[in-house]
Length: 103
Image 1: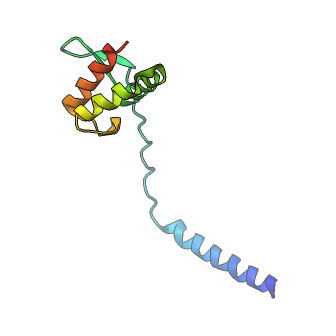
Image 2: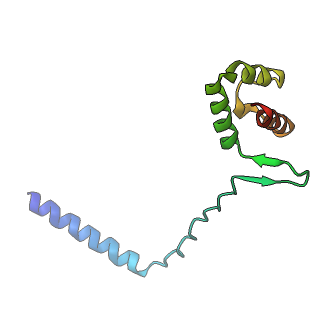
């Protein structure tokens, strides 16, 4: 019984393979483009360092470990947010500058 089922399935696979052999094939998909990582910091036209959100998070974690947790929370509250991920545009830039100035 099991052997007859295997033979039926084998015949079905062979029939499909024969039909697909005549069908046009799709072009190979284009390889995924991996973007090059940006340099960690760079200077913009206004000559101050631009940092990524990940770098800003790392700097804030270091500041927090060094006793500046409340100051970070206060600065975020002044900008109307509670998390770094909520910072956008000018607020992100302002907060980045503030973080760079904290010692």
